[in-house]
Image (cartoon, rainbow, N blue to C red; front, side):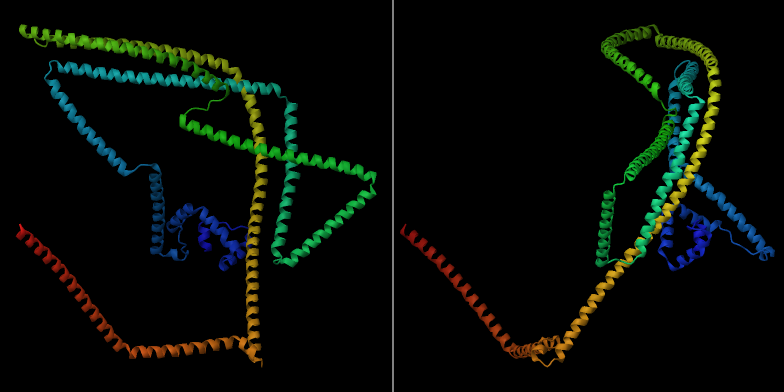
Length: 612
């Protein structure tokens, strides 16, 4: 077990001198030793599981040096070390593949989908080639379409570059505004701060920290120690009964009465010097309480400031990770709100214009439909005329050439405008950068001295912070040890109380059984017949005799039933046969009555026919 815990890097609490006691507690299964081990294991279960898996292959076998003199064992040892190194590399590659997020199934699906898209595109290209080959001058048109596509892609890349440069310019302006605001704040702080005020502030902070370290924290630590000692004392004492509690209450009442008597004697003495001292004592206690309350408020404020700074850093990192930019603050946020409002009003105006344009678009669409119908009629007439003259397709070719030439001229114009705009924008950006650099040069010089001062203060702050954190860590470790000891003592106390109550209840039960046995012996030995009747043995003997008589009667009754069983069964069979015979007679009687009534009806019907 110790080897396994050492492999998992478990550090037992206490010094090196406690290792033997730790091992003894582990062998005996002591709760203060086993419970921290279980708590540590269950908190780090995935990490320890991985470490245990790797230990099977990475913990090297210790081979004595005298065995390594053998060539075969030496070669085997070298092969073993090479295999361990190979396992390390393979394990690292496996972890990288697991954390990379790639899945072979997804990659296969993507490859199959891309192959299907490739086949579809090849088929579409073949169909388009077959369709274009029938058109005259198709090579020239294809070349022009290729050039058009290249120019469109170039236009898209230029617009993308333009948008990126606009974004960079906007971010540079934002950084410049933030730098100016920070410079303004630093100038204000530098104008208000002189060396005397800074020294005074640092002295106040040192006094506060020294008070916290020398007075407040030792008092709290001493109070916690007293509490722990008191709890240990309570845990070491045996369980208290009702008599012990009553005795303690009497002692408390007696101490309260003595305190009241002393207070009355002091009030009767009424020394004026004591009155003055009590006044000063009261003032000193009030000042101490105020000082402690202010120290607690300061500590709470520092904790709130630290949490707010942590939260601010987390929010800023989240915002940078999500948006890729920096967090907007203060005046810049107000300016953004103003811009949003102006853009909102502009949006409303544009929306109204869009509604008007939509209405006009409906009218123009109707006009376009009418013109298309007219154009189709004219086009049909033109095609018939071309067919009559023998030059069919001339107008279509002419329109296609005009359209291609118009597109080429538009592209040339756009290209020239785009290049001119980009050159002008680059010139403006260069001039603005030069101006901003010249304006920021004196500011940067002033900022360097302030930054150096800030670094010195930060260094001093970090030293103080490290001292404070080391002190708090020591106190926290002591507190956790004391809490564990108190918990163990409480559990032991509860177990001892349960054992005490169990022993008391068992002793009461045994006493009751002994008392009943003594009474039984007394009644059994007594010469009084009434007392003997009350004995449990006599009662049980009486019940046994009654039950034996009852069993004898039941056996006689059973014998009588067995003897008369055959005759009774024959008689019951005869009664059943009689019942069957009577039922048969009843059925015959009912059937005879029904036949007689039917014959009477038939006879009456024949007489009626004779009369007719």
